[in-house]
Length: 400
View 1: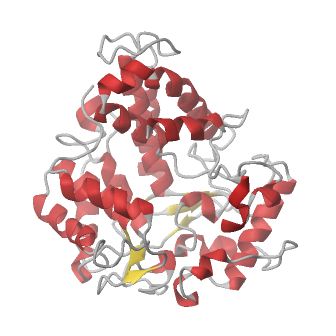
View 2 (view 1 turned 90 degrees about the horizontal axis):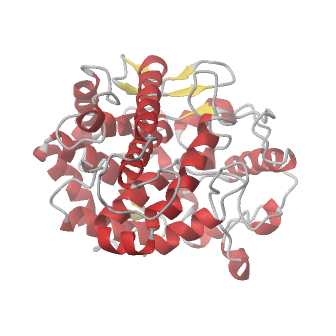
View 3 (view 1 turned 180 degrees about the horizontal axis):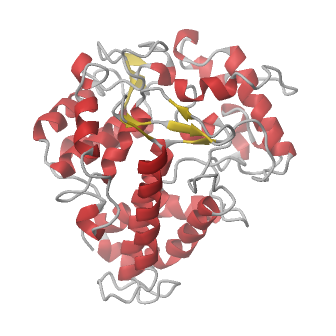
C-alpha cells in the first residue's frame, strides 16, 4: 500500500494537485474519459483529499517498515504541496476549496449538484463512451443527459488548461470534501511531529516534537472546520450542506455528504478536539448530526445508510448517489461514531458490511434490502469490509 500511494504522488502536477486518475495507457479503453481525452497520462481533475489520512494510517499499520523505507519523509512534502494547492488556487469565496466537476466530489450525481448542473448545456463535442454500463443497469447509473453535461464541463476545464481561475460553470464547496481535508491536515500534523525535519529526512517513528509545521497544520484544520460551521451548517436540516461558490447560495439538500463532518466531532479517539483542542465542530453540532444520522431520513428509516435522505424528492434506492448505500461513506461514519463511543450506532453501520460477501462485494447496495447494485467484485468494498469487520477499534487518527 505504501508503494501505491507513492506511485500516485509520483504523478503529482507541478501546481501541487494530485490527479484523480493515473492511466494505464495499455488499458485506456477500460475507463472513459481516458488519457486521450485529457491529452495527458493523468486526469486533470482531483478527488476528495483523503491521501494524507490514508498515508498516516498506512504508516501506523507498520511503523517499523515505514521507518525503514523513509515513507513519511517521502510523502509528507508532496502531501503538504497538495494541500497548499487546495488552500490556494482552489480556495473559494469563503476560504474553502471548490470542486470544479461533480466527479471531483466522489458523489457524482448527488442532488447537491442538480441546480448547478442545470445551467450546463447537455451537449459535448466528445463521443461519449459508457463502459460503466457493462457492469450495471441503466437504472443504476447516471443517464446520458447527465453524462453530456459531465463531458461538457470536463471539456471546458481541459480546454482552459485545467486552470482554476477560469470559470467553467461549476464551482461547489462540498462538506464531505472539506471534512476529509480537515482530517488530512491533522494527519499532516502527526507526520510533522514524527519527522526530525518536517521538510524531509529519515523518519524516526518517534514523536520528538521536532516537526515545526505541526501547529500550522492543526491551525489550518481548525480554520477549515470554523468556516464549515459558519457557511455550511443548516440548522433546519440538522446537517452540513453544499455551497455554490458562483452564486454564494447554500444547496439545502440532505445527503450523506453532510453527515461526514461527524469525523470532526471531537471526543475520545476522534480526529479533532481530542488531538488538538481546536479542530472540532461547534458545541451541539455533533449531537445534532447524530440525531440526523439515526433519524428517519437515514439509519432510522431502514437498515442501511442511504446516500440521499429517504425523504428527499430525488431519492431513488437504485440510482448511484441518489439513494443507494455505499461502503465508503458507511466506513467513514463508522469511524466517527466509534470514536464518539456510540456502540449501538456503530453496530447498525456494521450491518452494511455483513451483506458485502453474500452480494459478491458490490459497488453499493439498496438501502432498504441490501441487494447489490453497480459493479461486483469491487476492490474497495472488499478492503473496507475487511477493515470494518476485523477491527474492533476506530481507525481514526491516533494520538501522536
